[in-house]
Length: 110
Image 1 (cartoon, rainbow, N blue to C red):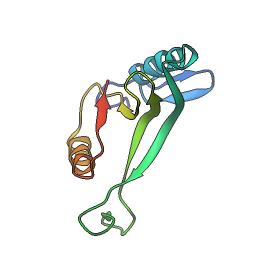
Image 2 (image 1 turned 30 degrees about the horizontal axis):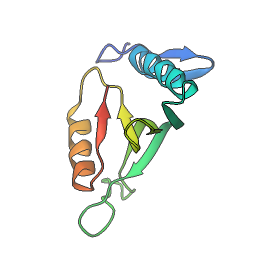
Image 3 (image 1 turned 90 degrees about the horizontal axis):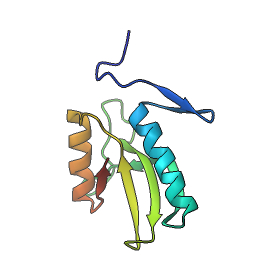
Image 4 (image 1 turned 60 degrees about the vertical axis):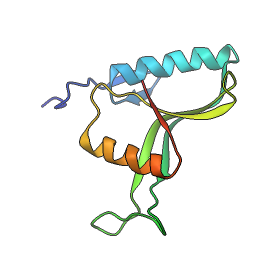
């Protein structure tokens, strides 16, 4: 059975990606890092979601988190960038993105 959003899992250099789009973006970001445009490139970076006073918990009591596809420092804008490769923004993603925005964290969608 395939992914309901038609994303095709892809492996590049032994790294497994949830979609071809995410894999292609990783390759682009690696080229940008080699060119010196960005640095400190990371994959699958977890960020815990915070409410007004404390962590937001899942129904099972665990800390809720968002996992960014990529995080890097962009020298062109002198800032850390969180990025998510989305072909289709799910309702859960929209909710987590709104919570992150309330926390002052912006997520770039590619």
